[in-house]
Length: 541
Image 1: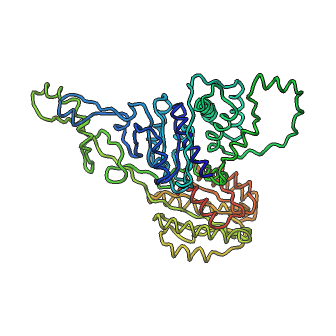
Image 2 (image 1 turned 90 degrees about the vertical axis):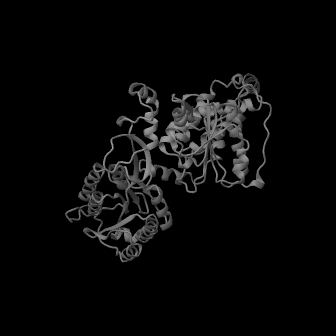
Image 3 (image 1 turned 60 degrees about the vertical axis):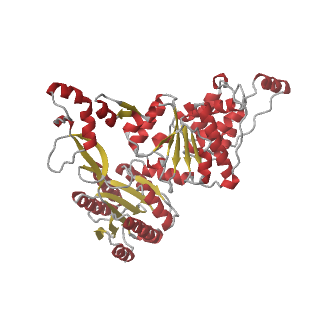
């Protein structure tokens, strides 16, 4: 399998050279001899990008030193001004802004191809999905060893424009993409381009079934969102011999859908379903950190903005000089004075973005039904998550609901020892007042927001709510109360994740998660470690 990944990686680079319209390739591999050997196959003129590259370096801008020295406006070219391949190192760290700029550059024309080097160590550390969608190929070289690699030389390539493709292939590829759950039209377009490029690589004038199989495997496997089940259908009767020979003479391209699906299915990762669950859970959940707050004192630097000198404001000297440089000649002629002239409109103020601390509010079901099934696993999962939160210096709070009410067992704290002790003492038994637990968690989230924290509520329950807010044993009213509180939580924009810890997924909990606009994780028969990993992934950690 590792050798096959290497073959696909080298083949992807060859196809990109033939057709730059394929966009590029995402190579997931840590820095080492395997990746270094692959990079020797990349064009030596490829320009390197860093995830923190500035807009001036990308698109060009004012050459400040030359402008001040000559007294005339001097522009410098950016990296995107010259066509050719681009290599993005540490692609998993690329910001959303950089991903958007590179995506626009790839969409605009075929002047550039992108080789994204994804060095992520965890499954959630990956290339921005919007940028990855514009790259035809994705190869994982994590398991490749240098001793197992073998380069395969290509034949004499033909001209890409001269390669033809059978009429019905486009419809077939779209059908295959639909069976794999791919909703992007870029995927079938990339498959068609890759098939033509592969045919050209081997000097063929028409796409064959081999070209189509390889193209679908390279461009569709990593985009699949479901595993297609093999169809068991009766084989159609064989055509008469004369008709069969006539068909083979007229058209040598006859590849059933099932063979294409088998080619793609062979490359699907074993943990595809777990990855898809984590991706769905992360959707809309941000990056797992606290809310962003803009200021002018500390944090991650942001582009400076025009402003006035005031108390606490920090002037961006370079930005101010850049704003003033183009006007120096006009100002000198108008004033009759030499030297650098700065006007109030030139002043640029530094800006920073800092993240607020996060509060994880674990809301644990300690009722009788949960105690008989999953309370032990839920406790273990929460304990593992608490250790991770402590390492990140997050605040944690613990709310338990059982009997007829909910109780705040632990106010927001960073004390791991105290949290473990309170969790170990958590008893089980009684009814399931889910609405009361959500109400208490919402109260803690509201207080945390007032203190400048960013709250996230994690609800661990089997979903069998049977106690209403007023303490009555009324299953129908309990569900109604939970839905009402869920609408309040959603209206206040509180991030929530719902973990179904029951032995079977509970439809009522799925509906509750939809009302909350929250991630829903049904985890039947999962142990404490898997529970904690799934929750951590959903939170974006």
